[in-house]
Image (cartoon, rainbow, N blue to C red; front, side, top):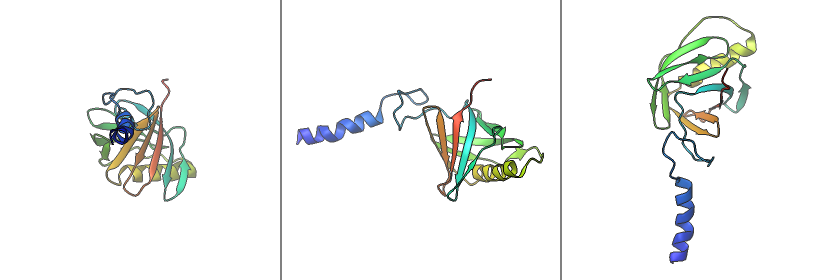
Length: 147
């Protein structure tokens, strides 16, 4: 009985880990990393089973004070963001009104719609961030290189 209990509890203890929230971990898949205060490059968006590649300009940053900003693919934007643990909710988006090529505008509309669909779940690990909305659509991001 005790051997069976150990076989069950040891993997659970390892999976839970002991790294404080917001600090880097050795790379375990379930590790929590800070989402705020990081410049994220948007890599792509998977919505309704279709993946759109992001323009190189697409970015997102959420500061600890609740300010979110970035680039939707063509236009710069700002919004309020509420972060509670791994849950994020964005307020109304304010953006510039430039026009770009059709592919960039298609991505921009999908990105803006994604951010405003309701509560989004964040999962960060190894310099990558995945945001998932209630419909299962996913925004894929990577830690942006410092310029």
